[in-house]
Length: 219
Image (tube, rainbow, N blue to C red; front, side, top):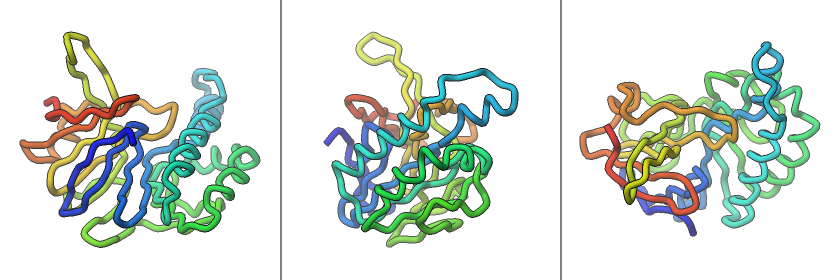
């Protein structure tokens, strides 16, 4: 498995190179900020005409993690759709694939700032999820045991003499911020006060990619 073991509020987790979070003991897979339908939303609002393959690629990567891990529960940690009109626009493409992924497991859509209303794609729609020592919500509230998303953290480091930019997990012993799992998603540097102010001085990152890498958080 391409991932790094981390511990948050006493829960032993795996930060995977794909950007997904795996909780082996509870068999829970968590992904954040899928932003399905983002290319459609950008085009609809008069922005750049991006190749409309982001939903396909994001779902393909999600399918790969679910096939590999066979989780009992999947938590989508908010901003799963770029907005509610985007959800309607991609329904024909996404609905059957999501139905297959949801079959036989508990599926939770945590509400985000892009998709605050109910989403008619199966599963359960909740503001936040409490499980053992962890609380899963979209935007951090600086609570112990909090697993959140929203900020799309990314790190800029020099590794073996080469500059590298990667999306990343940010965590300390009390809380964790997930990277965006979606294909067309930007990011916020870990040095930004919105992120650095949420974690302690000893915070670390796990860089996503072919080899997940754990490092001190760049500030």
